[in-house]
Length: 293
Image (cartoon, rainbow, N blue to C red; front, side, top):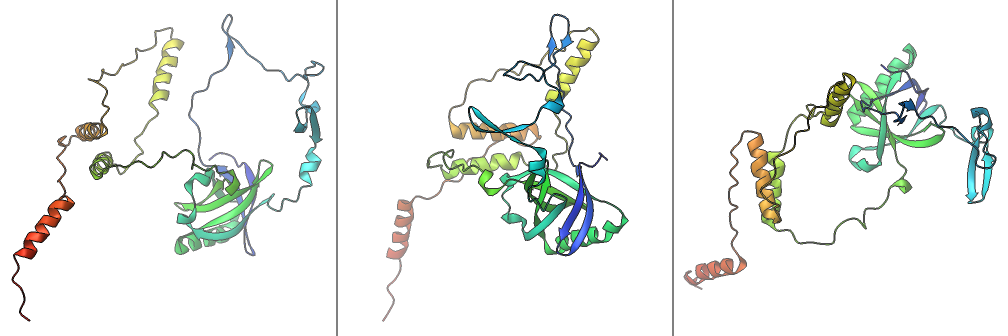
């Protein structure tokens, strides 16, 4: 388990739960260094003042806020330390809501919350079981990396999870991005539903980063002085499909073939038009015998 990045306590009414915040994810991306191609020397960056051209050590570098293009003001660590931040060492639960009330776009990074000492075990378990029974999630405030944040407490297995959340005014509106109103036929929607059904799976744990796998092979080959493996080029397609319905049908067939299923896309049942329905109703009405008074 990685080391803690923050220590504090969950404030749940008058109940205090000492906890440690631990990162819940880790990156496996392959990183590169910038180098001088002539001699493979690493490129270093120096911190130089733009006014006098001097290279500065870290103890001579501070924070500045830009009031305008030509005016900066200094903001010291003491200024930031004296800010009224009651959540500096606490995850303060402010409310409980249904999980359906939380817009997923507001969720950011998430962290595991581990108990900090034996005394925290019982209140930690109490909060976890209360969340399970109530089927609620907890909205909380906490401070991390010098700023107050909004958070969400949920459960994963038997551990509490802290999700960082964006503040409401940080979410941009997608109103201008959505396309204008366009009519889509029922048959096209049905084909799209068939495509969704043909691509449905129950477990996504089998997905792999194929780009990283290929990159590792390239690095391994070059480290051994060999040529990188040849890239597999996909077979050329017969032609570009511009018809939406035809594209959907081909997609359904391809998805079914990849799963070893019957690739035949059956024709959709034709619906009766309004005129035909009216004629049928008229015939039935004309054929009825008048009721006696």
